[in-house]
Image (cartoon, rainbow, N blue to C red; front, side, top):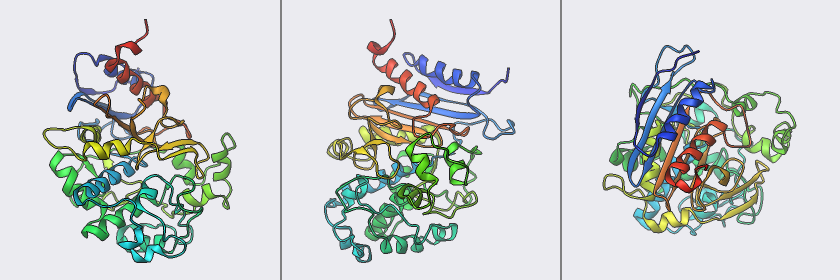
Length: 397
């Protein structure tokens, strides 16, 4: 049997989380991974194990950073909401007030609240797809967003802003502060909290990066046959569909990106400890620091969008910038409370916070996910275990 190095700490009462984490390795489903749980402002689980790369020669460490994929948007949202609270910004003021070019082409009524709730309709950049060069320069992506047209009347429906979301918020942050989302996050959230989490690594950081194995979602982005199992997969195979245009047609990223380049929709890197600590600071104080106040947290956890997503063609529920229960990728069946919020990554990464339970959880890994359109099984088992530890009534008799 393959032996995997494992290390970390698990406090009394949370032993089941450590056991399930080990079982994921014993079952042969993990390569390298880490889990961190904060409860009432303290880390009660902080474990890691396996290997940072497929050669199985470099052990995963506490500070190993994994690519987050879609949960990158959680870091950008945290940065934007911090700015909103610090400066008292009006979420219902049209984006065009601070970004005049954006208000053209039928986008004059779009507000930050619509963007956060996935309701702006600005989901496609297939007219000017994102390239590595565009990410490095930032301005080409902002120009493409300004030239975009909404795919539905803003505010009337919701669809996952898979490619555009991070860039929209990053430009709004830059227009207000002169800082991109990555630099704002680093200065105002990562630094005071001491987070191993980055939207664009600092040059020469020497960070310990995990080698990410290809997930099913990434294979599809690279041109693999999507099959017909789900309506979303069928649509991904149709270049004329909104699903394809928003998710595949809006990017021309053929090679792994330089981790020092900011990709605010998909490219952040973080350790499990850094990610969980950030989410803990969204629902309470962590060592005297709280990222957003209780009123903003309550708005984050309030449903703004429900029903079938126009882009991924699956049921979804969104608060302000975060997934809410119930959906196949953020399911109540995992034990998530009604006000829990977070993000699922198609690569298997999962993060959430629950203000009612004063709970934050982060799972990062590099084995990828063989599924698409639902929560990764390994993450699901871990989240269930966390909730059984916090709520003994959930434990089987």
